[in-house]
Each structure stands twice: as structure tokens, then as C-alpha cells.
Length: 344
Image 1: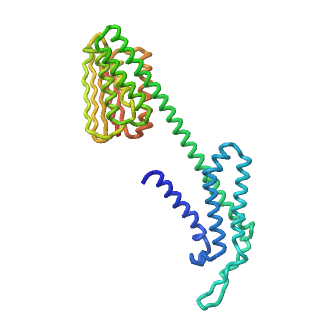
Image 2 (image 1 turned 180 degrees about the vertical axis):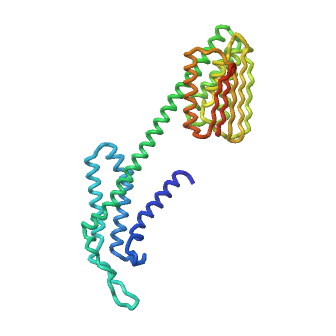
Image 3 (image 1 turned 135 degrees about the vertical axis):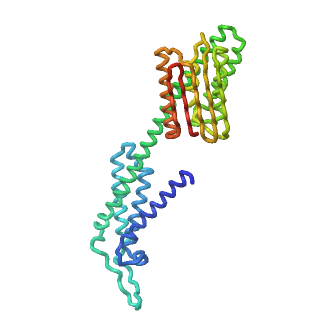
């Protein structure tokens, strides 16, 4: 059952329960059949039906078009009119008295006369509780819905901002690497540009969504690593492994690359051999990633940028995978160790 069908079913059940109140709250010495023949019950049913109708009109139209638009005078005129119509309809549907019925002996008897409190003002008084319930419930539900929509839009804006911080970071580092290759007149410059083109195509066409096919994300990571291998050459001893035994899985874009990028950016010293271990294992709907890189001296400004990237990625993980991930970042004397366990 999808979300829309579930919501409709809940509304139908709640509406039926609300309309059944006059039948279960009447005199205990009357059967359901007797209550259905009673003018009092007819009046109550109409009052409840009109209150329910007001609930939906208020929720779907009056609140968003009038109350949220600060047209308070018109809104309260509408409320008063709706209350007057509900109270009046409940009263005028009743006749002078209930029709006579025959008892078991065939003698006509009256069910019972209308009590004094079933006059117009009595009906208006009884209309107040159910009308107030419809008013406050529709108002609270609409305010809550609007608040949730605002929070979702705010969160989406924050995620877009974090992605905007990450993507130019990739581009800046990669262009620096290609620039260095161009200065050296390296034969692999053209290949590096092709790798960058593939990365940017992925970012512009895929990474703007919340989730992407896992295969495309892994392909993006492989392109990035190939570009870094071209850039650093033999100065980096790289152990890169992907074990993918899952099909048709999806993942949040650019959720893994931050940790891999940091391994290359802050774990490589061009003047000496650097060791980087990257292992990604996917089995069914579970992903495990382990990264170990040599610890090199980091300038304070770079350390701040690294911290920001990690914090942003952790925020995205918390929003997109709440309670579905385990992230461990350990700093040892000579190495950094990152371990991510993610339920896709």
C-alpha cells in the first residue's frame, strides 16, 4: 500500500468514526433502528456531516487562501458564516415532532417529544464543541504540514549548499593536477582531461539528485582514482579494490568521495613513497569502505578545509541514512584509518 492510499484510508476511517458518534451517543434505551428514525438523530447527523465538510474546506482552502495570506477579517467572517449554516441546518431539518410508529399491538405511539434544549439555541450550543474540534484540528494539522514542508525545503537547501561546497573543491584540485601535467608536457595530459570530462559529466547530470545508481557512483570513484594515478605516478603505492556483488542498488551521490579525496590530498608526499589502501565491498544492500593512508604534515588552512568536508558529509549521512550507517575515523601515529559501514 503506497503512502497516498494509506492517507486516504485513514481519512475514510476517521470520517466514518466521526459520523457514527450520534448513533452511539444517543439514549441507551433506544436501538440503532429507533435512533435512525429519530428527528433528533437526523439533526445530529447533519450537524456532524456539516462540521466534517467544514473541516476539509478549512484545511484545504480557507486556511491556505485566507489565514496564511493574513486575510483575517475575511477568514473570521467565513468561520462565522460556516458556524451559522451548521447550527441552522441542524435545527431546520427537524419537524414539529417525530413521526408516530406502531408498537407490537398496532397502536400508534410517539417515540418521545423533542426536549426543550433542542430548540435553535440548544442546537447552536451543541454545535460549538464539534465545530471547534473541526476548526482547531484542521488548523493544527495545516500548520504542522506547512512546518514540515518548510523544514524539508530548508534541509534540501542545506544539502544543495553542501554539495555546492564539495563539487568546486573537486574541480579545483583536479585542475591543479592537470595544470602540473601540462607544465611538464606530459603525454597523459589528454587522458587526464578525458577523465575530468567524465567526472564533470557525472556531477552535472547525476549528482544533483538525492540518490543515483551505485554503479555510476563507483565508476565516478574509479575515474577519480585513475586521474590521481596519472597525477602522482609511482610516488603512490595504491591498493584499490572494489568487490561489488549487488545489483540495482542506489546511493547518495558524492557520499564516499570526500574520504577518498582526503586520502590523496593529505596522505601523499610527492618527495617520498606514500601508501594508500582503499577497499569497497558491496554485498546485497550493505556497503563497507575502508581507507588507510599515511599521515603527512597538514597546514592549518588545509586541515580546516578537510574538517569542513568531513562535517558536511556526516550531515548528509545523518539526513539521508539516519541510523543506517556507522562511521569511524581514527588518527594514529603515522596513519589515518576511515571505516564506513552503510545500509543502502
